[in-house]
Image (cartoon, one colour):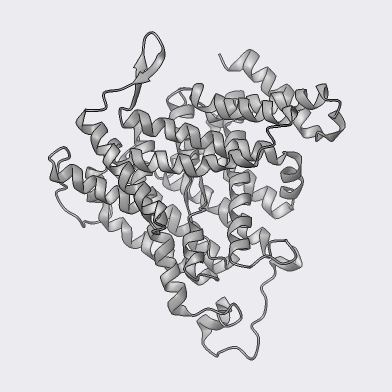
Length: 450
């Protein structure tokens, strides 16, 4: 453990209030009230995941009520650990992109049972934990060029948006051209268009929680027009976790195959760099970086990995730090108390499972499309004028939606990058680990992908 990861003793001049002293509110120039407002703001900005995650993972045959509870509990667990141990105003929840990878690539494309996929999620969290506590994360971060990190996020964004367009009926299959434009006058497509218009209006106007509010209005419009049946209730008891709880542990023996090794690596890869980028971005926004470094970095990374393991046991895909935490920081959040308030709201949300009935694919489609747009912003940071970066980045980005697989996109990008650098005469600039991955992924496509 580094000196930055040690808990700092409260200053004697601080308030005698135990909350103030524990979270160092006075030192960070904030108050309990301001942290509460920030916590609510963060929750509203990311509450959409409570309904989007069951919609996506439910495609695998998993029980949607159990996924809803697992989502809320995993978010509360991870956010609480981040708030109380790492003491950052950063919230966690099952990550967009990784839930799509879990459902559409691992289960529906590769044919891996969802129970085994949960075991893979647990394994990726365990590996992330080991990397966090041993300090290996810095070496791995330096091994992958920033160009490919940006391309990974952007490619996932395009993949998510593509799924949203399919759910909306905007993009449909075609025997002659593979995909084509759907019927834009159908009721479901019109409802999605309305939701997309409202969601983008909120976001363009700078309204925090715009994605969540857009879903609420879309669902309400669907109910009012009769397209969606109204829910039987709004509040109820917490549904049972029994259909998914513990399946990750039970199915660990199924992990020891080459195919699952690729799956676990992909989960680890995406979560690792997504978490790294989010933590640095939010800490920088809040003015919490010290000499460009993240204090208590080990605690922050460990919080994320423990949340992933816990979420897998509960029954959901990878739990990760959310960039929507920036909404809470913009509202004044500076300490872990912000995360504590957000975690409490996720726990309270567990009593609203009946609302899942009105969250249809048409209701979640606008959220998927908009989140895809936000993730695709990474394209602007890629050096397109340097082909040794542009070619592997483009292959990575385009392969994800066109092969319907995040794993394929990452693998192809990591095959092309060392080859391009070799052709460019810069083979010494490539980390040795990437040459190993080149051989691994080539072997995968030749002998296992089919």
